[in-house]
Amino acid sequence: MTSEPQPSPHGIDPVSSPIEKLEQLILTRQATVGVVGLGYVGLPFAVEKTKVGFNVIGIEQNPQRAARVNQADSYIDDVDSDILKQAITHNKLKAVTSFDNVVDMDVIVICVPTPLTKNLTPDLSYVESVAHQIGTHLRPGQLISLESTTYPGTTDDVIRPILENISGLKQGQDFFLAHSPERVDPGNQRYTTQNTNKIVGASDPSSLKAAELFYQQTIQYVVPVSSAKAAELVKVFENTFRAVNIALVNELALLCDRLDLNVWEVLDAANTKPFGIMPFYPGPGVGGHCIPIDPHYLEWKAKEVNFNTRFIALAGEINRRMPSFVRSKAFRVLNQLGIAPSKAKILVLGITYKKDLADWRESPAIEIIKFLSKDQVTLEYHDPYVAEISVDGQTFKSISLAPQTIANADLVLIATDHSCIDYEQVVNHAKVVLDTRGITRNLDCDRTKVTLL
Ligand code: SAJ
Image (cartoon, rainbow, N blue to C red; front, side, top):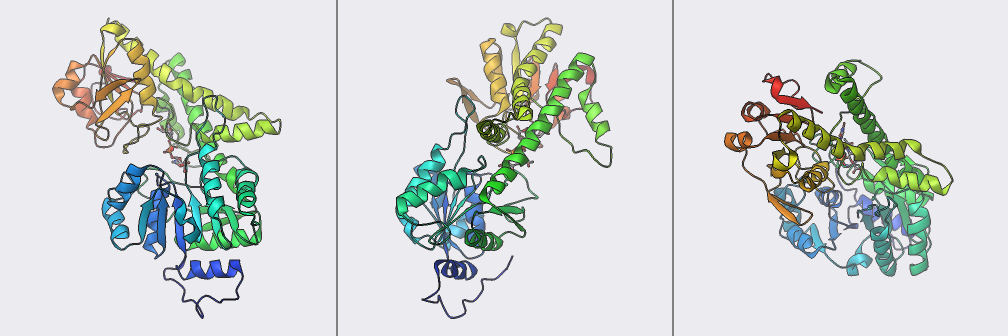
């Protein structure tokens, strides 16, 4: 990665080809960068590019989000408002809601969601809609990079035809197209957009070269692969690897429950092996925008070539089963206290999909709350990151974690293990605790009060 923009030898050579012009604009940081989708991937990426001198235009369909970006009011945990303010006040970043500026952009990076439909099939509607919008403004010399996680073949077989058919331009000679999967671990303080190795793949050499050069301006180690398809598969494999290993330890938790063994003791001991193992831990289920979703993109593509990815299907089934397992464990604890669920008060501690961030969408804790609400349990929650949630039309506000509110609950259910909570205090004041994250397993406390997943 170069720390300084490269001086353009003699300005932009009027006779150079589209690829040479684009490379010069990238090297001199004179390229205008468009980022479509200012979410947990797009906004950190946009800010990173401004830090090395690029002018960035964010295209954000949500007008409230676009306004907040322009007011330097960050809504993404990993983007500090002060850093955002620098980009805005130096006129290096602005957010718009339309695609009219696309013609002024030299590089356009697509960071929009790729969710699943209700029956677990890929929903490319956001990506296709963006491709149509870009296609209507596409001009020679532009590089388009798809970062959204998707099945192998999307860039070449879905995006490319849309861009070529609408614009009449050809990939590789007029415009350039690549896939560079996002690798963002929300809340990770060590690995950021800037120091996380980045895969780049394209199906023609000019596109690959332009994309590699672009990402090398801000990322220490860019890894080229032979095609967009290979880059797409790298990413969905990474998340499938996690989903399958999380499912393995979740299944172990289910088995340990039958064998009356402590799954946390077994895993902690297994992870003392100095080689050939990697720590994964059971939990109340798998949340976030990636792990529960991305593997099913690969499963769907595999079926297209008559191949059954059984690991993915099984992993999804086991991980989706965990919230109801937590419900059955909670009922077992209440039963031992002689309390019927419909007479019980449960305090859910932590509702985000994983610790130390504010994102509670797709969180397993919400699934658990849905189950317990149907069982007419009286529910309260505390989460320092989330002041209010609505679940199936019911609104809950985070209550204070005072000793009295802890003691008032028949059961405290730890669903997310935020680092800022004093779990010793929680156990001391609680009647009983169901710990689905193993966060209390090494605490010096009254263990008779604690049930681990
Ligand atoms: N979880 C477990 N047990 C584990 C690990 C995770 O139950 O051992 C749960 C978490 O609590 C969470 C879910 O699985 O609910 C997903 O956690 P995650 O950290 O794997 O997923 P994300 O979506 O926050 O971030 C991941 C990235 N995380 C890591 O690499 C550690 C990575 O897989 C992707 O770069 C990113 O998704 C993405 O955007 O694809």
